[in-house]
Every structure is written in C-alpha cells, then in structure tokens.
Length: 370
Ligand code: G3I
Image 1 (cartoon, rainbow, N blue to C red):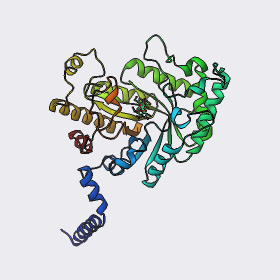
Image 2 (image 1 turned 120 degrees about the horizontal axis):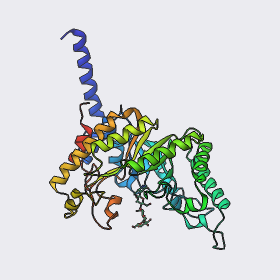
Image 3 (image 1 turned 90 degrees about the vertical axis):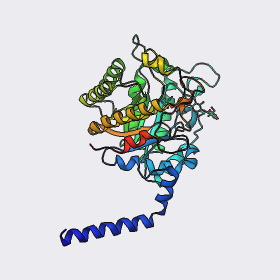
Image 4 (image 1 turned 135 degrees about the vertical axis):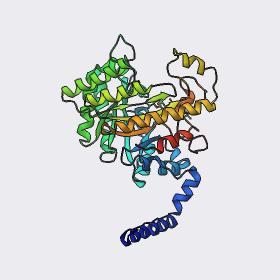
C-alpha cells in the first residue's frame, strides 16, 4: 500500500473511532431499536423515508422515529375534523407538536390531508340553524380551511395531500358520490388545488388515492390528474397510498403501475405503505386459504419479507420518478389494519415488530446490491 493510501486509511479509521466514541446516543438508540441499520441512511441517495405519526407516539417511539426516518406525516392531526372542529375554531396543538418535532430533528413534513370524504366535520355542510348549507357557503368554508391550514405551515410542510380518494371504485361512476362531490360538484378539486397553491406557491401538491395497481383505478387517476393539469390546475404529483399485502400487488402489476405514472409524466410518492398479512382481494384462491389463520406464521413472515424486498427493488428502479416513500404507522404494536377491514383482527404490516425491533423484512429493505 502506498504512503498516501496508508495515511488516508489511518485518517478514516481514526475519524470513525472518534465519531463512534463521541456518538453515545447512536449506540443507545441502536440498542433500543435493535439495529445499526437505518432506512433513511440506506435510501439517502434514493428518496426520503417517512412515517405517519400521532403526537403521543413522538414520546413513546421518538428514538425509533428519529433514527429510521427523515420525513414525517401526521396520521390524523391535520384531518379537517381534528384540526378544524368548529367553523371558527382551529385545534393546532397536535399538528404543531408534530411539526416542531420534525423541525428539531431536521425531518421533512408531508401534510395529510386537506380534503377527504372521511373525517369531515358536520358543521361544514350545515347552516347555524341545522339546515343544509348552500353550495356557495360550503365552497367558501373549504377555501377558508385550505387557506388557513396551508398558510400556517407555509415553508414548513413541503408537500400536501390536497385531495384524497375522490375517485370511485365503482366502475359505473367516475367520482365517488360523497358529500363533497354531491354538494360542490367536481369543481371543488380545481379550486382546492388552486387555493393551496395560492397559500403556499412552493408546496408540492398531491392527489392521493389507493389501489393504483388495479388498471381501471390507475387509468382514472392518471386521467384525472392529466385533465386537471391540462386546465392549468397545479397538481404536481400523485400519492399512491400503497396499502398492500403479502399477496398483492404482483411484481408485474407494480412495475406496470410505476411505468404508467412515469410515462404519463406524473411524479409519485408512496404515501401510506404497509404490507398486510391478509389478502386484499378476498376472491383470490390465496386469499381464501390464508384467511383460515390469523396467526403471523413463519410462512407469512417469509412472504412479507419477499414482498417488501420486491417492492423496494422496484421503487429503487423507478427512483427518478419517486420523490418519497412513507410508511403508514410505525410498528406492528399499533396499526390501523388492526381494525380494518375486520375490527379487532391483529395485523403485522410494518417493518418493526410490536417490541419496536426490526423484522426480517427490514433487513431485506435496507440491504441491497443494486
Ligand atoms: O379520537 C378517538 C380517540 O379519542 C379514541 O380514544 C379512539 C378509540 O378508538 O378513537 C379515536 O379516533 C380514531 C382515530 O383513528 C385515532 O385512533 C378514529 O375513531 C378512527 O376513525 C381514526 O382512524 C384513522 C382513519 O384514517 C380515519 O381517519 C386511522 O387512524 C388512520 O390510520 C386512517 O388513515 C387513512 C388515511 O388518512 C387515508 N388513507 C386511508 C388510511 C387508512 O384508513
């Protein structure tokens, strides 16, 4: 080895030792989380890795969140019913605490979600006397809501899910027939994106939905975004929720999905990733067989690792068109899937187990050669 190389090797070893010795926190954290690997480091040159959180989880699971993720999304705190429970009352407490946590820890913040057919407050559609509010008033209220929330977090929340799940799963209707659509018509989508853009012209604005791996839903989402853009509406990207399972999507379906968004010129983020151990499509043979047991068996653990490995291999492949990947919930200790679609059926869809330790799937995601 030549002298120069020897010197640089010596310097590298000393710096690493020094850093390790000084960085007591890291080793305490790796003891707590059971790994030295980190998702955010493994994907540093690909895309930010995010997680959805509630305010209380920042205390209990703060160490894990900080070491593994570099982006954060409030799981419920920014939904209209929570952040804007009465017409003239905003409840900023939980959302502010999540934003403050993210800033302290230099994490990106995704806002979720400005308009969704669920978690809307009753007052939105009512006059003070309880009668039905006219369209014009509802639109004015939506404008006030979006303008106030986006303005408060201007330059802090870098991306917003502006409209969530507006498209129907019913082949016979395009838009979901929800109260927003029934009262305001499809123009509320144009307006929502325009209001958000006016409030924070730098924010990246998303249309967010699920089941993109199904061809009809995917085609509709691409059509909607393209149509809005052709009208000059600022829809910058699509959010693919990615509530998937160990059985679906297949590699073929997922690649086709990623390819279709890429070729339509629509950048994407994976916004709500989890891989349920139960099938999404109850009509498949695998589904029927798998549903006979609720246990997280060694076989399912294997399938989950393979599915996560495959998913991330494809996400890496399409990284040019993917600007972020966010997991929905932190560990298997608490996931919305424990109560959906079957109330009280425990699920295990994440990369960390109920003791916050990394699962075999975690290593498959973190360690790769490509
Ligand atoms: O606020 C009450 C709380 O006081 C009470 O202790 C608790 C007991 O069950 O219920 C609490 O509210 C629940 C809330 O989650 C917090 O746990 C709501 O009833 C429940 O409806 C709510 O579910 C959330 C759901 O959206 C509806 O808002 C899930 O946590 C959240 O993961 C889920 O996330 C959605 C995305 O926003 C959009 N895409 C689909 C995804 C899954 O449904």
